[in-house]
Length: 113
Ligand SMILES: [Zn+2]
Image 1: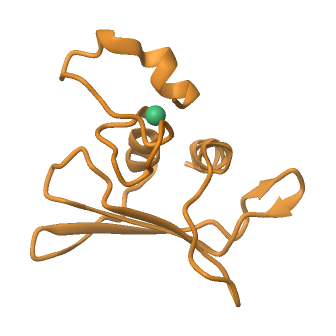
Image 2: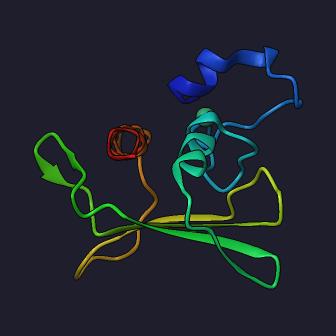
C-alpha cells in the first residue's frame, strides 16, 4: 500500500479504497497517490465521458535523472478508478509509474503551481 493511502487511512468519508500499489495497479479505487496526481491536473480533456490528462513531466527529476516525457492517465466520468496510467518517453515502451515517481511529480507541480 502507498504511503499516502496509509496516512489517509480508513477515516476518509467517501468510503473505502483500493490502493494501486497493493497488488495489481489496474485494480485501484481512490488510491490517495493517484488522487494527488489527479488533483494537481488542471487541463482535463474529455472524449465521450472518458477523461484523460497528459502531464508534461520532462522537467521532473528523481535522483537526478529524468522520469520521462509525459504522464498520461485516464478514467471514466467521476470514477475513482484510474483505468490506465503510463509514463511515456522517447524510444521506450509506455510503463506504469512507481509510487516514488508519482510523489515526485506531485511535489514538482505543487511547487510550480
Ligand atoms: Zn494508494
